[in-house]
Length: 498
Image (cartoon, rainbow, N blue to C red; front, side, top):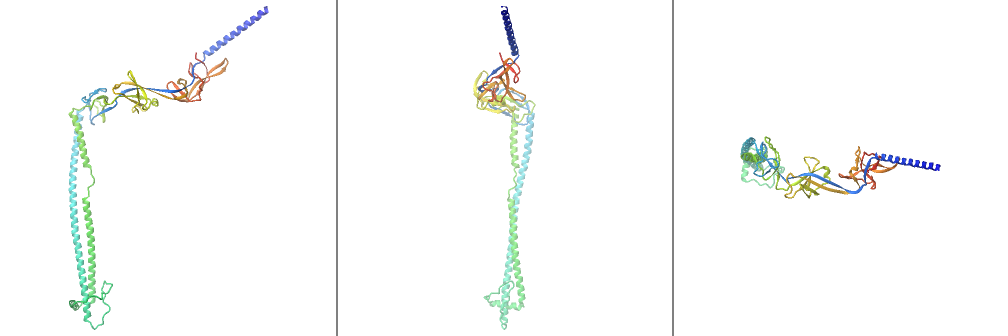
C-alpha cells in the first residue's frame, strides 16, 4: 500500500514536471514568436493594369488675336488690365507723342533723300538716252561717210583699171599693126615662121587674126616711121601690163578696205543701238519711297488719333506686353482672346502620363460641379516646360468660362498579365534591382517555421498600386509579402500578422 502510494506520488510529480516543461515550452515559443516580424501576404493574380491619369487644367480661349503697333514707338500709358473685356471702342494704351513725332520726322527726311536721289537718277537716264541717240546718229553718219568714201575709192580704182586695160589693148593693136607694116616693107626677105612672142603670153598670136585695114596700115607706117624698134614695143607693152596688174591690186585693196571699214562702222551702229546695262535702282527707290510714304501715313493717322491704340473687335485681354515709359516691342503688343471661337480646356501632362493619353482618347472632364465625357482633340509639346505635354479638349458653345479650372481624368487598361502583385510588395536594392519577399518554410528547434525569401523580379508594367511581374520568378501559389512590422532580410523568420 505504501509502495503504491509512493508510485502514485512519483507519477504525479512526473506529470507535474511534464506540465511544467510544456508550459515552459509554450511560454518560450510565445516569447520567441512575439519577437518575430509579422507580415501580410497576398497571392499573385492574373489581371490587367489600369493606368489612371488625372491632370489639372484651365479653360483658355479657342483663338487669340494680336494687337500690333507701328515700330519704334514708346508707350505712354496702359489703359486696360489683363482679363478686361474690350471692344473696338476701348482704348488699350496710348503711344508717347514725342516718339511719334520723331518717327514722322525721320520718315520725312528719308523720303526727301529718296526724292532727290530719284530726281538725279531720272536726269541721268534722260542724259544717257540723249547720249545714246547721239551715238547712234554719229555711228550712222560715220557709216554713210565711210560708205561714200570707200565706194568712191573703189570706183576710182575700177576706172584706173579700165583705163590701164584700154591702154594695154590699144598698144597691143598698134603693135600688131607695126608688125604687119614691117612685113609689107620687106617683101624680099623670106617669110618669118616664128612670130615675135609677146611678153606675158604663153601662146603665139592666132593665125586667123584679122589683117589690118588700110587705116591701120597707115598708122603702122607712121609708127615705123617713128623709129620704134621691137624692143621698144616689148618694153612699152610690159609697162602697160604691169600698170594693169597694179590697178587690179589697187582695186582689190580698195574693195577689201571698203568691206572692213563698212563692217567696223556697222558694228559701231550695232553697239550704239544696244540696250544699256540693267539698272533697277531707280525703280527700287520709287518702290521704297511709296512704301515709306505709306508707313508715314500710318504714323500720321496715329498722331491724329492722339496716339490711342484700339482693338479691331471685341475680346478679352489675356496678355499685356507693353509698359508705360518702355519701347513698344515689335510684333504683338497686346494678346486678346477671340470670343468668336469656342473655348478649349488645356491640361498639362507629365512625360509618364503622356504614355497613357493619345489623341482621340475618351476622357472624363470636370469643370466646376459638372462632369462629362470628352475626347482629346490634340497633344502638343509645351514650349515653356520641355518634356511637358499639353492635352487640349474643345468645349461646346457656351460651355466653361475663360480662366476656369478643371480636371481631366483618363484611364487606360493594359493587356492581362499572369502575375500581378501589390506595388508595396516590390522593393529596390542599391543597384536598382527589383525584388519581392515570398513566404517559405523550414524546420527549426521549435518545429516548422516561416521565413521571408528574397526573389529578384522584372517589372513589366505598373501603376500607383499594382505591378506586373515577369512570369517564372514567383509561382501562382506562392504568397508575396506585402507588409511587415519590421525590416525584412533574406531568410529571416517571420510570422503571419494576427
